[in-house]
Structures are given as C-alpha cells and as structure tokens.
Image (cartoon, rainbow, N blue to C red):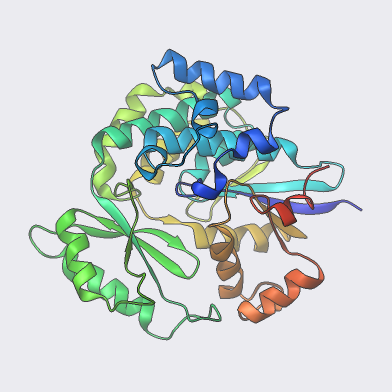
Length: 345
C-alpha cells in the first residue's frame, strides 16, 4: 500500500564525523549526479564533494565550512531523495530547515539539480567568505519535549533587551521545534551566553562556522546572492513546497519572481520558522508519514518536537512519540540505517 509522505530536507550541521563516507556507502549508483556536483566544484576551483566524502578523517575545521558543508549536505540529501521508493510513497509536499529550503526547491522541481547546486554552493561560499556573526542554540522544552511554561518568553525577553544595547545585535534565527537558534554579532552572543542559565553543561551552545543566518545581518549576503543568481534559475514546482514561514507554494501555480525574492531575500535575512513549516505540512497535507532526508539525524528531534507542539495525531510528549514510532513509524529518518530501509527499495 502506498503511503503519503512529506519530505523534510536538512540544513547545516547534519554531516558530522559519523556521516563520513555517506555518499560512498549509500549512493554509488548516483555517479552522474555526483559527477555534475564535482564538475561544478572543479570549475570554481573548489575541492570535489566526492573527495570530501572520501577523506580518511573528519575535521570540523574543513567539514563545517559553509563552502564545503552546504554542497556536501546538498549532494547527500538530494541523492537520498532520489532513492525514495516511489512505489511505496506518494510525496505530497516538501519542506526543509534553513539551507534545506534550497534542497526542497530542488526536490520539488523548482530548481534543476544543477540550479540547486548553484544556489547552495554560491550562498554557502558567500556566507563562509563573510562569516558575519554567529549562532547558538538553547532549548525551552523539558526531557519529555513539553514546553516549559514561561521559558521561551524569558529567552525572547533577554534577546529583546540585549538587541536594544547600542553595540549588540541579537535575533531569533530559527524556530527549531523545542529549541531556539539565536544569532547575532559577538557582543550580542556573548551577552546572551552570560545571561542564560547553563543547561546539561551543553546550552547555550555555539555552532562552529555558522554565521548569523536568517537575520538582518545577512543583508550583504542577500544582495550578493541576488546579483550572482538570476531569476531564470527558478521553475514551476511539480510538488507543493512549504517555506520557512509556513506558507505553501503550489505546483504549477507559483509566482517565480516572488519565489526568487523570498529565497534570496526574506529567507536569508528574516527568522526561519521551521516549526511552522512542520505544522503547516501536517495540517494541510495530512501525510501518513514524514521522511527526513540524510545525512545525519540531528533534525529528527526538532521534527518530533514540532509535531508534539501542535498535538499532531494526539502526540503530547516524547513518550507518546516513541510509542508511535515503535508501532507504526510516523517519522522515517534516512540518516539512520535502521530506518533508511523503510524508505528505499
């Protein structure tokens, strides 16, 4: 029986040490696509994606760079998308987190595979060259993934007060399930780190080689992107897309100028609400399951927390979600070998 599915595309931070060799392990049959990606990189005097994936050792300094991480994750995720067994799954919509929006555009057909690579590599390289500001993450849910009353509002009040200081910039970068990704300049981030209570000796946690994505600090990157990437890249999608505001772009009814403006404008400089994207995806398309593309599984918790926050299918906490996963999986993470087999032929 065919199951309806919403596909979710990952963003930065999903290719880590455990993912080294992901393309080689899972996508030896994607030689034409990976060859195109490598040729693109060679034409821009950049290291081949296959060489990065085939490295003997993982290095944070190399693999977390935007000019390497973005196209590497793109290659892995789009290859995963091509591997989904279409005889078992009807893909009713696609969405993504942060850079995952560019991958979602490709999966939906709004960008060609080459066009997707062009957008991902160009924007990733521009952000790495400038590296304006940084990001950190902080949770507002408890161990059962239920929102702690008042914590989110408290975090946002700290952000407001710090951003009001003359030399500090601080914003909500991504609404990520049970966490807020916060971004700003060094003064703003340091002020927040000294204000927020430490949690589990992990949070607030800085993200290596991450700029202040999805904030007004990225206006110069948006302008460079618009100048380098023409509107001609965008095409009518053949699958519905849910963006970082929770808005839907329908197949064969998309204003391509507006899509380009959003992708290279609002999406770069304003908060990316991944939680809203998940809420809209399940409420409007009522899928039987959600398929999160690899590499990695860092997005799985955020998806589950987003489902819990809107009470999807009666979910009220982590225990409910785990029980549901054990009986009839609602979430399939292709970055996990034990779940990957559920999605591919």
